[in-house]
Image 1 (cartoon, helix red, strand yellow):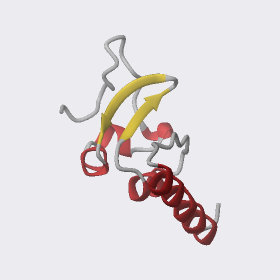
Image 2: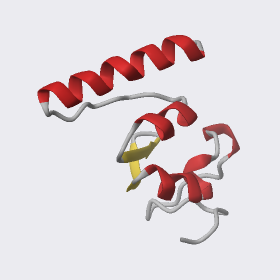
Image 3: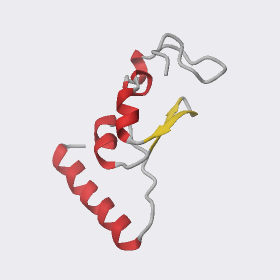
Image 4: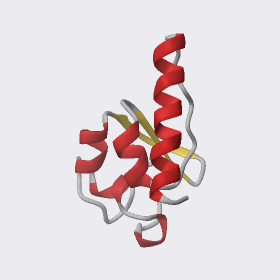
Length: 86
């Protein structure tokens, strides 16, 4: 998605949420766009929930900010092996 289309879509999503007073479920792989648009983010890794929080918290955590191909494998506890401790 181009930056312009992303911006246009963000405007529409924010308008819908504000006018209707509802939350919007967004499933997106562009972490930069998600960090700018969302107030609360749930992070999944291969379908497993690994983290939830505001963009500032998600951005600060190395394990969720790295692209999937750059991460280590996930252990049975859900922690990402080799990632910085939280």
